[in-house]
Length: 86
Image 1 (cartoon, one colour):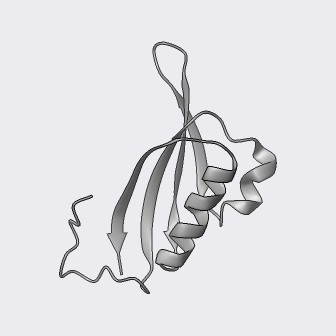
Image 2 (tube, one colour):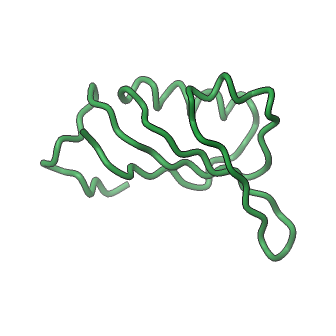
């Protein structure tokens, strides 16, 4: 992934806002394990559902933990984008 924030404050230990899209729906009971991410869904024209997670994470360790949780839920990650850092 190209780092569009190179030289602009994105660090391993710094906070950043991320948008992560996964295939499928996340059961609301899992919201507590998703570190305060805002959860929304979108449905494609063919009826497939994607879940969109947006939120600020404290650091790269928190991002890794969130991605591990999504893996445990068997939800394929479509995209993971850093929206802003610092």
